[in-house]
Image (cartoon, rainbow, N blue to C red):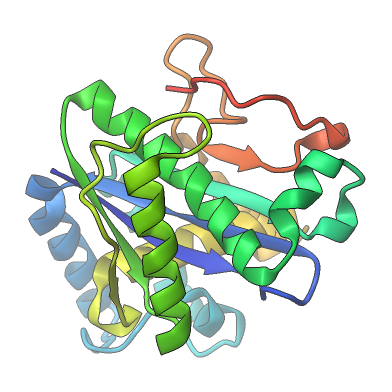
Length: 243
């Protein structure tokens, strides 16, 4: 089984760039990820039950030496894939087709989740496996809506495919209890920060870039490990098979 841990960057409903992304790994690789994470934190005297997240790095709450060590560990950790989905607000797109996906903050989040679920489905089909998605819990009502949306998505599929290899339902929980969700936060936040022109984020993103999923034939990153929607130049091309 594969596990896909997801987190977000950006504030829904406040304009600008919103990103949803995460890490995918095999269940049998989980002990190695846990040991790498614990070993890195212990080496810097950081309590194992205290979160390491991008917000803390940006605010200086996480020592720079620990932040560097954590991103170095992530660059070598046993992730099968990393991926991120960019979804600007409707106001940044003149495409009628694209703006249909941004009518509300919930639509923005759902659009990003749909694109990521499709990429996860491709990975599972490629490996002949099934998988589950773990998401950072938000607020109780938001979680209910998200579960309803994803139930409909797994039952009826997306406009482009069925998600028959993803275990039905989402697993939601607070990130401070999950190493996988903290790793997802660091991956997507640094990548989004790089997209926004934040130098610190760009540096950490470069360490991780080699771990992002790429097209098996062309080696292309765009549209596979990184999905921008609407696409650059306001082109809303039809979705195509990426893995």
